[in-house]
Length: 157
Image 1: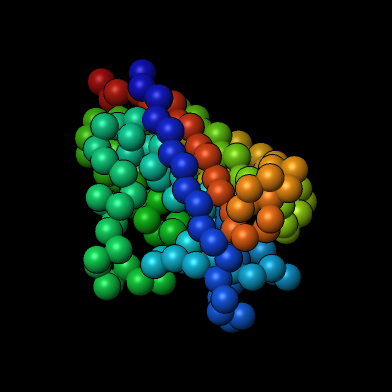
Image 2: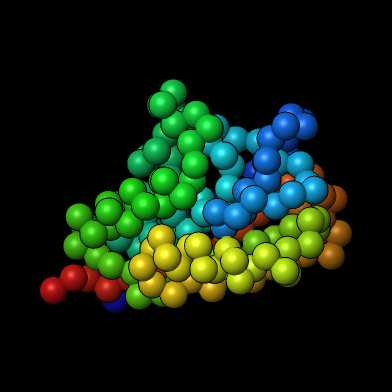
């Protein structure tokens, strides 16, 4: 068994038309996050956890910002490809956990929906929780959102 971890942070976008996506779920009433893809910090952290657990790099190495075909890409598509990559490397996910750090928006009523989407995509239980930073730092000043993820992988036999 192997454990992987991932962390991702994105600032809020100045683009008023950019949607906020977290855990594959659209969150209305909040500005979106800035980034090359759809900037879903929760999915990005999970991707990094899966890739690091399998020992095959990270989000930037697998899906680099230098690739113009990935501009604006749905991070759930990248997650599905990541599951294929870790399988090709001889691993599968047993479970994962994602924690979203955000001063705003409130996410409690959307966490189960995120967990369902991620669980379906990964093919293993994924729990999703959220917390604030009690107004400390850039996240606490509501300048953006961060996410942390861990994943437990098993080598295919």
